Image (cartoon, helix red, strand yellow):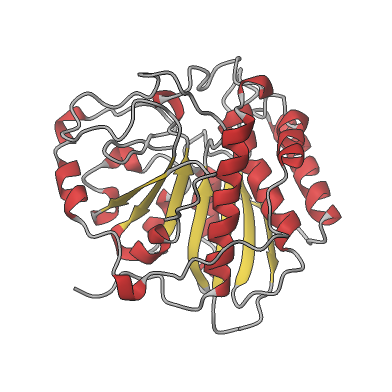
Length: 332
């Protein structure tokens, strides 16, 4: 995952490691979020596209085991593919040298409109059952699968579950090496830890040398990180629904070359293929004490926040699937 300040991001492999590079965030701040003429139109979500807390929590509980060894990851794939088939999808197992990704898609009504990918990694580090990291992300992708399978939209909806993110983004790197996955892809939403919140003053941490004022000292928001070349994709997450968690967006310039800590999850391989991708995260170990620990168990998930994060992803997915507008930033 990844974490940055003013708006934030957190690397799934740990907290900011390069404080000497933090002044770059001043450059990030100066980037316009989106051109008003190129921003996707956000509509009120359909009444039948509401995230089910019961189903989300059930997925996390069903995945309450370490998903590190080959056998454990195989059991996880069986669970995911069984759920997808139940929802009417036809999942494909895509093997690469050291692991297996899962891919499925539902065609859109406009063959020229391209596709939107919603994805999450399903593996864990050794010794952790990974409820937040990343059963929550898997659960939201499965909820998207349930809600959108029979909903006609202009764009094609693609789903992916990446293997071996914790081993160095291996699954997502293998995924983007297949040209058939990228040729029609307009944008990707990657989730990595979306289920933990804290509301005590000071519970949300920030790298101390970030030259900006923290937006909050509570961990009550969903952070969304994207590259400046695809600002309309990032802007699609802007929402004003008071019943959902706040969304803090971070536009990153130069594909993260000056801020390498923004490259620590499965969105990064897409950036380097020129594909717009955003990372949605609860900021990992800048917020939760259970990051990569045996205590990352279902009872530590905050259901209200988890359901709200899922609804934000669902709302944004609907917006992106229904529009045919370009998700590239306008030329300067």
